[in-house]
Image (cartoon, rainbow, N blue to C red):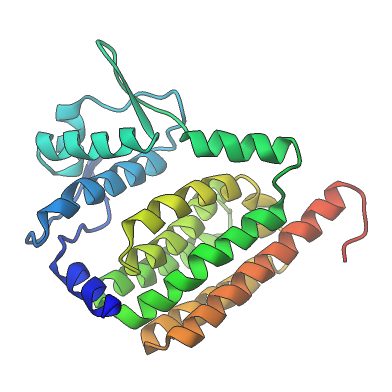
Length: 268
């Protein structure tokens, strides 16, 4: 019953195509609206993608409302609602007379402080990735929203293309790797899960470079991602969960191996 309810909600919801650059402007193509209550969440997602695509950081100011609406191809009221959605979750702060600025959610600072104090370890973070991403992969395989799965496949193709480049843009690779996983979460049809995973991915992305830079890790990650996509397309939730879990654990082992070398200790 729950899966059926989610499936109907996903089918009814408005879809947003990925941002495309046209003469320096981001253009978003909208389709017919189903559930209007989903609009703030979906505009908020596009604002976050815009922030990532422009490499904006906490403290940076967003473009004015009118400009952002034009960049995203949506109405000013939609931008306003999307910004309120992000402000309520700590991603943005509105300063009267100045504008809208990016900030890190309070939970980010709490996690970062915990890591600095060694109360929160990589093990804790990867355990939480399993808690969040593994079920999401199963739900995405079960729901079989073909439009959402197409976006997962597109994200993987873009990641593979960036990873195959002669000159590696590691910032782009980290972003696209994160985007691949976020698209899977989006395919699960749970926006609250989407927001939570976004915080964890923001934390993990900082340490992703040493993991991806390890000899052979890009190829292994590519194979693991391909297995996840195949399982999603097959509609087998069990295989999707298994592929996702194996990938996260392999990434954890790679991260710990890199950390051991940085600390001058032999890896396990």
